[in-house]
Image: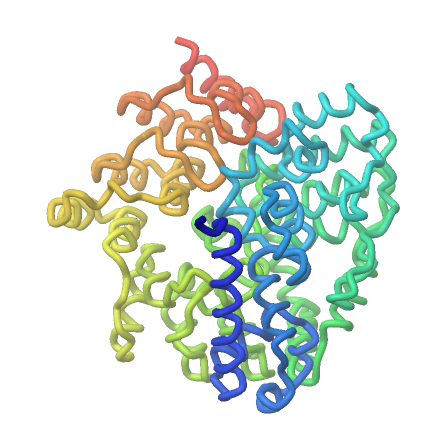
Length: 507
């Protein structure tokens, strides 16, 4: 009799854990950084001491965290998709939720906590109508309200963020207690007893934080300071001080006030709360750090390690390579940033720059002798984002089957371009042969995101290229018209544009 696939998966993880332990004990810096990124306790220890003290249990815990679980024991019970998804939310594992969102989406109709975590307000309303007591029901000591605040979906799009806001409002109206702290997790003392609103802040859902404060929920600022202190180590103390001093400068504060005013005057900005710096850069929105070479340089000089891979699956160096100018990446490299570091998916820094269309940084890395291991699909996406239609068409001509293996992650690049309203990028992708009805990581098509943002020109282009207006997204099960109506209601400043999209889609 063959063994269950779950057993085989666990055996593979056990072997991977043994290899990782051996690499750490041998002093392999990438292996040590990987484990330290997952375990705050080990981040407090000098890297040179880790090989002598690391145990198999530490590596098991790190792998469990990378996989979206709070513990190795929980990972071993991972045959249940619901348990796996909610564990990923509790464990703050953005990458796991994003990569498996299509698999998790149907869970909203079956479980109130899943509906809350996925921001499915209609499913959540049905659960509460059937049993109002579910508003305070617990799943691994978390209430539905906690799962709303802990959801990483704001990192996918503003539509997902606003849906979580609607879920939070529904739960509060039904009697949810917003004051209950997230229960202590013994595996991570620095994450214990968090206010639920703090989780929303950490995922960049400023819209939810603002709504909760208007409802009388205490600001997470005090806890944020406490959390920073708990996470601080001798290696990072100077970096935190540098960061604080930078944002206390009068000229910096004045600049940010000016940029906020500029953004507030633009339509539709009120509902955009991306935590992805690359997306903010492409939207031409002010970013907390952005491409400020002086701040990054000071942080690097103070001991900031740009190669640590966070729960998003990327290192700071990957993020900067995707959107920053070459001189900023040069500063990283000059201060010891290793251009050979890979993200949680195994993608190199150079491949990340190529994929994002940051051709200047890609050229810099090649000139430094970094091997270009970007894939054909990385190069195709990068050419489209850079507006190089000729290069995109040449890549497809050279590899006619290139688009037959497009992943949801690849498709998400197309979906986001449509949401941004970048007509040139969308045109390049369509001309290259991308399916106008392709589904991204968030479960939506390019037409859905363009409709929600009121991007009428992009909507028209997609319709001209056979986009199907009747397709329902995977997460909310709505058509593009319904997304446009939702945008008119929630995407501040674009009501008129969204209604124009509704009119066009109904013709």
